[in-house]
Length: 110
Image: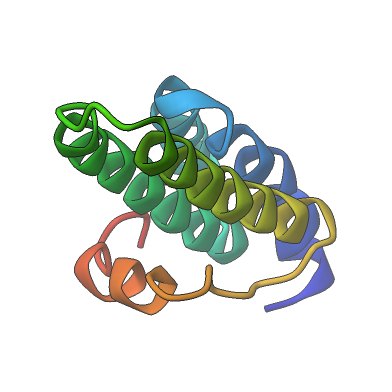
């Protein structure tokens, strides 16, 4: 991955972490100018958003503020980690689940 590839895909990588709509927008913007860096972060953020919504539905059924706040705190930390890596031009997976996201979304953005 070259510095030119990072600069081309940096904007799309950052956009992908801003809501689920950001992932969709970044995906279509990345189709115009393919960037491996942007594709990597799009896969990471898509996995985070889908997991957040799937588990959020389950966690929402608990009537306990400790469970709910822990869930939100966990995902806020993961999103900040991914977002800060995109801003810092780093290609690092999100802890715990990032490698899984790269594997299941392997043909997304290639």
